Structures are given as C-alpha cells and as structure tokens.
Length: 337
Image 1 (cartoon, one colour):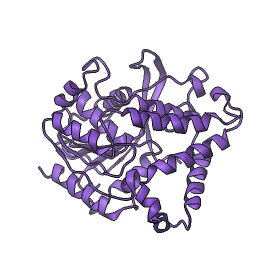
Image 2 (cartoon, one colour):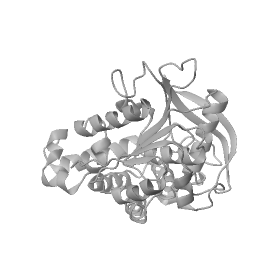
Image 3 (cartoon, one colour):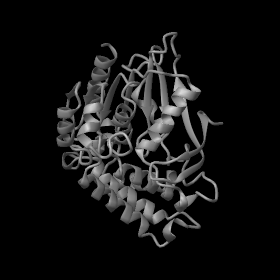
C-alpha cells in the first residue's frame, strides 16, 4: 500500500524546451494546516532520498514538530516515485526521459502547493544536499512566498569540482557492459555497485576514514562500508533514475531560467527569505567557500558552518548527534522569529 499521494500535473513544458508528458509529483504530508495557513514547512528530497528518508529530520519534540507544523515532503523528479525514467511511458521511459532542472522541480512543487493544497505562504524550506539546493531555488524562484530557508550541506549553484565528481560516478556506472546506453534488458548491477563504491569515498571526510569512524556505524572495516554502499545502489536504485537526477544536480543554478538569465549574483540578491546557510567544513561536495560567497549576496543571511568528520554525511540522520542538535537549533531560530 502506497504511503504517499500523487498530484497529476498534465503535460509540463520544461526549462530545456521539451515536454514532460503526463507528469506527476508525489508527496506526503504530516501534521495539520492551521487556520491561518502559516505553519507550512516544505521538505524536498535529496539525491538518494524519498519522503520516507526525510522523516529523520523531524518528529515530536524536534524543531520541526508535526504537532505544530504542516510538513510537506515532496519527491524530486527522477527518484522513482515522482515522474522518472523508470515509471514513465514508452515515449519517455529510460534514456528518453527529458532533462529536468531544479527550476522544473520547483515550478511543479509550486503548482502542488498552490493548486492542490491551496497554500500561499511557506514558513520554511529546508533540506540536505540536493534538497537544500531546492530550498535556494524556492527562495529565488518564488521570493514572495518563502519566509525562510535553511539549506544544509548544499549550494545555490553546483560548482565545477562538484560537477567533475559526478562525472566520475557516472563513468563508473556506464562502463558496465549491460548499460547499453540506458537500454538495458537487465540492470547494470556491476555499474551500480561501482557507482556506490566511488560515491562512498566522497560522502565522508578523510578524517572519517583515518579515525575509522565507520566502526561507529556498525562496520568493522572500510571494505564493509563500501560493500554496503554497493548493495544499496544495486538493490534500490534504477540506473537511468540515478543519471536523470545526476543531470539535475550538475545543472543546478538558481540563476538559470527567464527571471535572472544566468546572473547569479542578481539571483542571490533577490532572495527575501531569512536565510541560515549550514555547510559542513569537511564536506567534499558542497564547500563552505561557496556558501561564504552566497552569504555575502543573500540580503538577510547568516553563515553557520559546522565541523564534522562525517563530512557530507554528517547530515544523514543518526550519524552525528551534534550536527542534528545544531540543525534543530538553527531551524528553531528561523521558525521562532
């Protein structure tokens, strides 16, 4: 039984020019919308996440408490639940799935909120990694609607180094003999395993491996950790889905589109939301230096970096208790303004 709802979008013209046919966006809500409709929190999903994984970022007694807030957890295109290569029609399935940007994701999420849920204001958009990138996008694309954002381990524009890292994991996947340019008859399992193995080396910091912190996660050796990442990607993810989202990640830039026409500083300066940027100084994907630049140009922003040997995965629920405590503290600061 499905534990989420579906909003039918119809045909959507995408930023790159193509049409997403019979688009759908899936989501789950938690809590109750109050009479003023001013308790809305939006949680987009991260790269290998779904609405289910987002449940680790909120709960009773947490800063985001479903007893106080109406939480909307929205599945990103390409994650296998919203429109994706794996669940689309014959004309747009597999490698024929059109290129989708963060602009397209937020345009459709906005339609969900305004047309289906009848919401006019958002108290907070927050999220980890690609979900955080969507928080920036929300604030730039609909600046009058978003009161505050808190992207953590994310950026408003994918850096060139981040882009190159993604080329590496993509190359590992498509080297599988079964890949067949995305027309695989059976999953490219070895490619998916290689994707996960390479990914794991970047997800944590050098200190994480030096100090053998993988043992705190239940692995006796680094090889056990790598094997776990292999298995997760091979068993739980479709290869075309991963590459569709990877393209979305690589092209992430809040200045793309007709509003800012690639003027990145203008896009940053347009953000009206109260903003807290929360990078991890040991994150190998989303560097603090990028957030420092953003904080200089987003008018009402504060940069609050944190140190963690877990690197990018410091934000993964259950990994680093200190990160979770600081995250909740920062969220509370925004919500209690």
